[in-house]
Image (cartoon, rainbow, N blue to C red; front, side, top):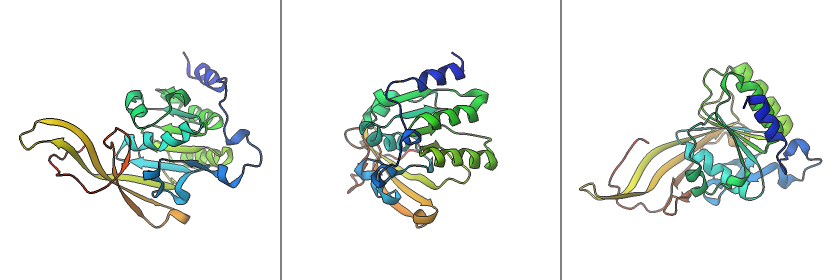
Length: 228
């Protein structure tokens, strides 16, 4: 199916509505909820409509940011992530019934993202290499006007907020290499503009013991460290 036809189909999905279709939203509507362990990372404790947020270092954090919003009834579209693991997304708490996928926008990246911004509460964009600052500003303006949230899995010129994941440490293996990887400690740091200009650092488990994101706690014995 061609990209324009796919987008037309997405736009026709029952219930797909965003801030572009709302009138006089309440102050509460300006923020989309996130899971409690992630709230301390974000100004106001949620995803602010009209903002662009770049997430570097962990696609799993991008998905975790969708979890509460989709469970609360928001719609999200994901493009440019053809290898997205839906099982992993579900484990992180994402409501798959409220996710639309455009795996590969091809050469039509800008019109695809523009159309998705018009039709969804949250748009997730995979690594966007070659996006110029001018193009990024134009899309950011559309995001602001429509009241959407744009999450990018990778750097984005002029992003309102950047989240970076470092310090990855897996738990679960014994010293002789036996066992199963169960949880991963990470450190998430945010830096942005305005209310987000002061960096925030939050320890997380991504994934936590049940597969979803969890607050970082007293670490178990760290037996193996990997870069993934």
